[in-house]
Length: 67
Image 1 (cartoon, helix red, strand yellow):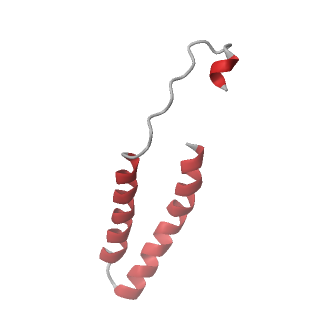
Image 2 (cartoon, one colour; image 1 turned 120 degrees about the horizontal axis):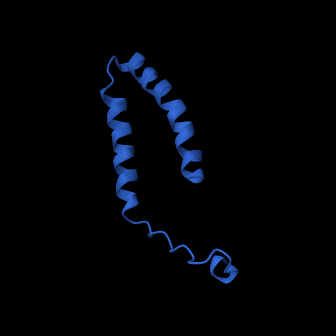
């Protein structure tokens, strides 16, 4: 979650500024929303290629399973 937050925070801050800038230039929101939806779709598609998380150790005190 921490790694994804490092990526989503700047996008969440800059996306409204970008959308407003595109609207000021083109007079429509269509292009900017299409770009953002395309990026989200690519991110969703890339999730299918991630490995599932590893199993947690059964006993927390078993240090060999944690390493």
